Amino acid sequence: MGIRVFIAGTDTGIGKTHVACTLLYALRDAGHVACGMKPVASGCTGSTGALRNEDALALLEASAQPLPYAHVNPVALRRPLSPHLAAACEGARITMAPLREAFDALCVDHDAVVVEGVGGWRVPLAAELFASHIAQAWLLPVILVVGLRLGCLNHALLTSEAILADGCRLSGWIGNRVDPAMDAVDENIATLCELLPTPCLGVLPYGTAPIEAASILDLGPLSAWD
Image 1: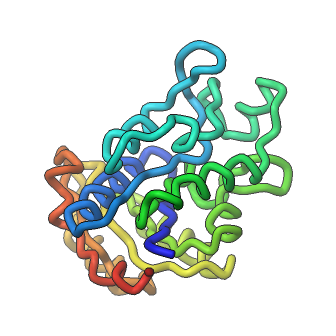
Image 2: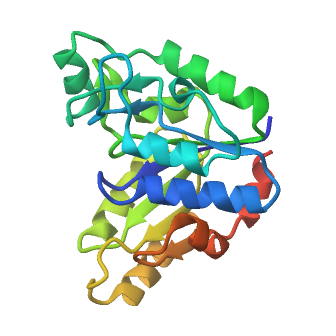
């Protein structure tokens, strides 16, 4: 099957895309034909029918080969809102079928597919459909991105509990230095290592480009995901 992984975040704006791109470069350095996917994205720009999302474009750039934009980001929404609200503004409703179709297309030519979620774990996509359902339905192991800032301990612990309660496999967490002035950052990282029930795969420094940060990640646990 190859490596298939879902990137979840403790919140919105904590660097899921930055981490996902870093992971893509690390996988490519390890010899994998890797690509990224952003199944649902809001806050897209461009003309109707050709909307583009900055996160999806970054994943495209970090992928091993050129891809159709629609495979990377099958649902692109204009309004910078929660996806279910952005879709309602366009008279649309998000469903799983087109997301799965795009995912399956990526899996054909790539032995590693990194799927980035939208917002936090429980962001609604539609009535009774949440971002978490993507990882659940596709049986994807989850990597949790922890934005290292004040409040991250609570957000990380609650999110990890929700991931496990949903029956998903939490295979690791990655810290992302989103606040370079955070107090007691080493102590917070130590607390996360102690309390989260999964290994730390790395801590990304503030302001380092994904291609340069790739060597920081420990891909050891990923070798068992084939």
